[in-house]
Length: 142
Length: 147
Image (cartoon, rainbow over all chains, first blue to last red; front, side, top):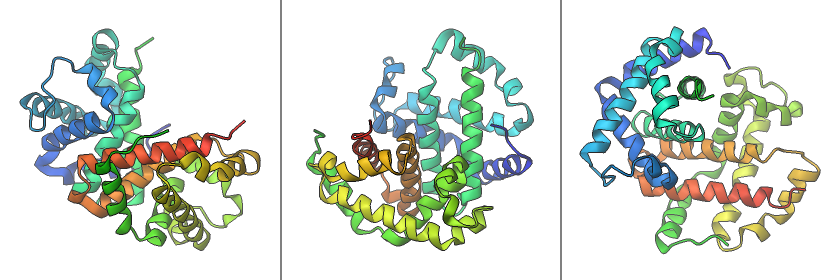
């Protein structure tokens, strides 16, 4: 699966329109993921997972930051997220299936806040981008 | 047997009552074919699927999308009895249509996105969770008679 030039343009366009809300969307993505897929909470036994939790906000900001970084370096996502990839492989070891679940929730959040932005073409490009990010983060697992 | 709380049933029926089955079905199927193009393998006789525009405007896609989502309405009416409701359809998808059940999961995920875009803020986390559960059990019921 390769990001075409169109995909890259679409993704960069989407992230530019998300504006300053990326962090807030990161937190909402996580909250929705914990509610929709409760098994994902197993990676956060040390977190307060209640609505509005400061830890979810902070972690959502980190997750969104990584997606923005990947979009800003979309020609070399592996390079941009190399350290994060090491972290996930060596320390966090989040099962690969969970990146799809996070991706689904991020798409839902974009659909909710920017429904007209999520045209079928943009939806396809963003889905591919999120898969690419997940692949990079799990690339060094074995 | 899947258990549904009163709240979940309410979230399912209230969303469903506001869904335009024809529009939503057409959009969901079109997006499936656009976002996951390999799913086009089942629709070789649908004519022009060469671009997102072609897919969205394709009358066979629209008609089939409506058919699929109308069938989904049976799930909403038979939440306590999904395996029986989809027994024949499951056999059909296995024996005649030869559809990998993974495709049911893909379509379910796409439907969630379509609903989210339509309902926006009303698509609360609880609503999303309930509907994600519903599409999951429908997919499971459709795969149940596979052999």
